[in-house]
Each structure stands twice: as structure tokens, then as C-alpha cells.
Length: 249
Image (cartoon, rainbow, N blue to C red; front, side):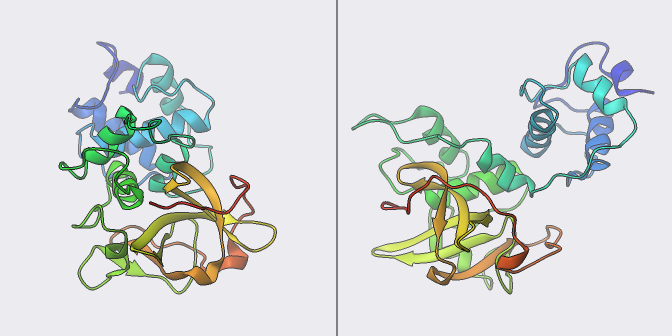
């Protein structure tokens, strides 16, 4: 039975379950997304649907309606996603920034609270909370200390593996005065800086340049398919926000 027939009663959204959801998940899996066909439309499936809609130039709703079902029923001809799903989640939020003055950005605070229930205000450093949110949305297990950046360098106690070098989607960890900073590798600049997509970079989500040697290591979610290539020369050239990060706190 086609997906279009399975959803004839109405669109599928996050929270739905059943054979229609499983069919959607398996169709997305065939297109390179890390879904297993559980039959439950959770955050990972929602992120995959949104990313696929974005790739096809469709309205990004996260819902599988008749138009989306028709696209998923087509033979698989599209290339797999160019970046891991957790990096796609972060890239989809470029420009999300802290509230002005003492005000909070409610969307930002809600995103962090989804992985750290006691998070209250975006004036509190949120780079690790952002990485934790993106990993969780992609179906990967975040750190057990979701607001602590340096926890992502603890391959012994946290669900990460250390890589030999940078890779697209790698979790990059560095120290700073008073703590650490964690972000995702998105690519490299023409000058061989790393272009990193993360939160709390000049108070927003952006892609910013970093020297490779400032990072204590590069890590990967344990259980996720390992990157095919590692090393700065294997990274694609990406644009950045145009200036080094002055604030990570």
C-alpha cells in the first residue's frame, strides 16, 4: 500500500503512531536518514521529515500530508543527506538568538528545557544545551550533563567516541575562561579555519570560524554511523558568520 493511501484519513504529525508512520520512516531510511521503522512519530522522525522537506524546497511543516506522501512514494533517486541529522537541526536554526536585554527568547529557552528541565534563562550559557538539543532531536543520546560543554570530551563516561580529527557533524570541544565551549563542525573556510555551527556563538546560533588547534578534541555520538572521512582537508568549504566569536557565555 502506498503512503498516500495510508494517510488518506489525514496528515501525520509528531505523536502519531502505527503502520503509516512506519512506512514513512522506512521511506526516509531508504533516503539515508537514520530511522529504524519503530512506528512512532517522535522528534527524530520530525527532524528527518523537516530536513527532507527543506532539501526538496517544500514548506517545512514537519507533517506528512498528501503532497509529502506523494514525494515519499516516488522511487528513491535523491542523494543521501549531505550532513548528519543533528547538524541539519542546528543549521535549520541559524540566526536564533538570545532575547534583548533581560528578556528571554522563549523558543530558545524551550529548546534547551527539552533536554535540561531546570534551564530558565538564555543569559545562562547554552552552547552545551544547544548541542544536547540537536542530538536529542536527531535521535541521538546527549550528555548526561546536558549543560556542561566539557562533558562532551568525556568519552569514558558520556555517549561519545573520540575521532582522529574533524569531520562534518563532529562535536568539537574547547576550553575557555570559566569553562568550555562545544559546537558542531560544519566544514572549513578557504583559509583552513573550521566553520562550526553552534549555539551561544556571539549570543546566537551561527557558523563561525575557529582555528583547529583551539579544540581539545573532536567527538561523535556513540552508536551513530561513523563519518566516512576525517581530517580538515576532507571538509567542504562553508561560509561563516564572517567574524571570530567574541562571546561563548
